Each structure stands twice: as C-alpha cells, then as structure tokens.
Image (cartoon, rainbow over all chains, first blue to last red; front, side, top):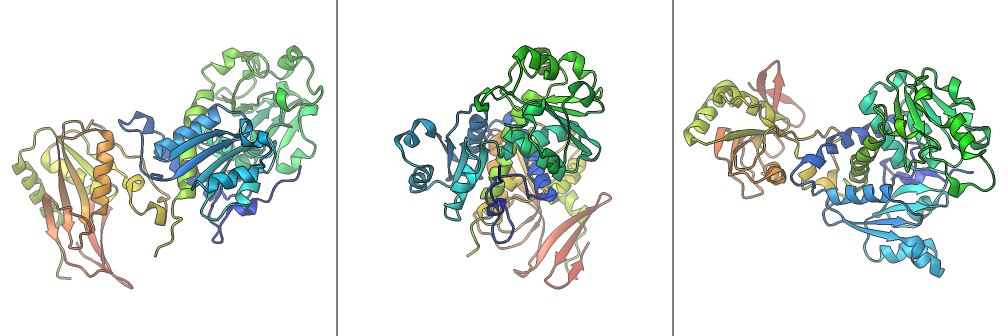
Length: 324
Length: 171
C-alpha cells in the first residue's frame, strides 16, 4: 500500500491545516497537541461544558463507514467547542445513489462547512477530499482504510503519557491484527516520533505486514516471549470485516495464542498498562477480566479522545483569519 | 523612570479598599499569569484562607481566529464554586478590557456569582470595551507601543515597562 502524500496537511508556512496522518509531524507538534488537550481534560466537570472557540463554525462528521465511539467523541468535542455539528452517515446516502465522494463534499461545501471529519474504507480518502477543498476548509482524518487513524493514535499517546510520562524508556507492544490496522500504523509513527525505546509488534505471521520493520519496530509471533519487559500493551481488534479468506485459525486457537489473559499479563512489567482502541472482541483478543481489570485504561482512552479531538480541532481552526 | 511603583504598598492599599467594600463570601480569582500573582498577594493581606482561583482565558479570547491558541494554555482552576459568591476578579494590567471581558464569560461557565468586582494593579487608558475597574492600585499613562509587564521572582513582584528596542525596569 502506497502512503498518500502527507505534505498537503501543511500550509505554506509549515503550519498544520489538515490532520490527515501522524507521519511527517514533528515531536514538538505532537507534544503541543497533547499539552493543549491537557487543558481540556477537566471540562466534563464544569457547570457549562463549553467554550466559545468554534462558535459559528460548522463541522460535518462525514462517515462513509460505520462508527459509534469515534463519531460520538468527535461530535462531543465539536459541541464542547461550540461548533454546530452535523452527522452524516454517507454510506446510506448519496454515495449509494452513485454520487461520488467529491460531489457529496462539494455539496456540503456549498452549505458553508468549515471542518470535515472524514472516515472511509478507502485509504487516502481524507487526503483526496482535503486536496479538492478551498484553503479555508479543514479536514480531519477519522480513519481511512488500512492507512491511518491519527486522532486515535494521539489519544493513545495522551493516555500513555498520563500513566508513563517518560517516553524515552518505554517499551510498547502492539498485539494482534497489524495487517488491517490503521490504528497500529498511526501509533507506530507517533511512538517513534515521541521517542520511545522500543515498539514491538506481536501477532501471527499472517497478520503482520511484510517489511513493517522499516517503520522502526521489532516483530515476533510469540506473545509469551514478546511481553517480557513491556510497559504498555496495546491490543488490536480482530477485524473480521476486513479479512478476505482465512487469516487466523479458529477463534479458540487465536485466543489461546494471542488473547491477553491475566496469566499472560503477568509476563509484562508489573506496572504495565493495557489499551485497546475498541470495540473489543471479548474472549477473542482480550479476556474480559483483563479488559475490565485494574491495569486496563480502555475507558480512559475514550474519555481522553474528547479532549484530544478538541485540541486538534482548536489547532486547525485557530489563527486562520489573517490580520487585516 | 518617574513611574517607580512600590508594589507592596500598592497591594496593601488595594486590600484596604477591598475590605472597605465589606463583601460577604469573597472569592479571589486571578487571571493567568500576572493576575494570579497579585491575587495571591492580596489573599495574604486580606487573610482569606482559601487559595485564589486561576483563570486561563485562552479559550474565551476574541482573537482566536486571528492568532490561534497559545501553546502553553493551562486549565483554569476554581477550587471553590462561584455560585452566589462575591468574586474579586484580579488582573495585573487593565488596558483594552478584552481580557476582562473574556474572564467574565469564563466565570459564568462555572456558575452565577452574586457580584463581580474588578481589581487591577495597574490601570492604563485605552479601553476598547465599556469595562471599568472597582479597585485600582496605580494609574499609568504609556504610549501605544509601550507595554507594562509584571514579573514574579522569589515572591517579589516587579513592574517592567517594555518599549520597542529597549527595556526599562521599574520596581
């Protein structure tokens, strides 16, 4: 799979104007997003959970692929910034009538949308849309095919940083279906940009892309040995819907070899945290007792997703209007 | 310099003025960063036990679409509820009034205070909004391109007048 051109996410001054991929961003830029998210984290406790930053702006959640938590957290994030948020499940709308993605986007552009949140099953969809919009309209990639899911990676970095502030000594394992995972790709970029000690990719050979080592990771198909010395365990969802043909053995056998159980968790460092981007296949990639256990930060990831998405939206939408 | 200011004395006078207002259930709230320092000094003078609230008004600024967010934006912290309290809003320098406008909007996101009074260490002319202080430490007339900036080192507050090209320090 060829990565789409990421340079279009910057303006002529090198400022971020779209958020399409983590690849190519600087450490400073990522840290800035995380720091700003920190200031949004206590918002849920305020009497009025809103700030006026995006007042008068229109945000369209354009999802060509179903999603609950990502779409919902984008919606909440937009509303907490006072934007008007419109949700479109486009797969059930015009595209099924033969209208192309770009026609749909141009129609919405004519309604004066300021920010598109795009999810599509095709890699590069958000890039395509961003490339065809006028400068003042921003695009955030909410997941494109197998390519990238940058806001998920950022909320994962935020969640890790809450528990383990010093990235330089961290060993992170990403376990499971790497092949179909846009989340894993974005996480690998982000972890390496933030300078972790090691990213270890663990999964059956059929679910690890060839040449993934070029992204700066080590690989193993042995979960038992692979968890040694690990501080952060990121479990990935088995994506049945993206699999053509038989890539995993029976579910029982997969769980036995690659499912994270209490016993296997003991093999990692004693303060290791467990993450999962959701939705969870309980009893397939992770045991319920681990998903709901004290080391799990899976629900923190969901909560943090709102603050991190607020931060990214504020970063894209602020400072756009030139001084007269 | 001609505008050397005894900040400790000025803050004592501000505290005396606040006491004379006889505000029930007072709540000090400083605007980040200079206002928080002044609020802390006022707290000591006023003998209020709870520490002052801190407002970072970045999310309420009216120039967000022009300049974006400050990279070091902080979370506002109001340790006590503002509901029905007499809020003493504190800033270091009152100039255009836009910061105070933003701060008042933010305060109301936390609840409905009984009353808000504005206390500023320095007032300089140049208001762009109909906002006036209730308690003023000192008045200062500066040119448009000059800036009054408070610094805080080891508990000592110092007022600096920044002019284009060179910096003069007052006290």
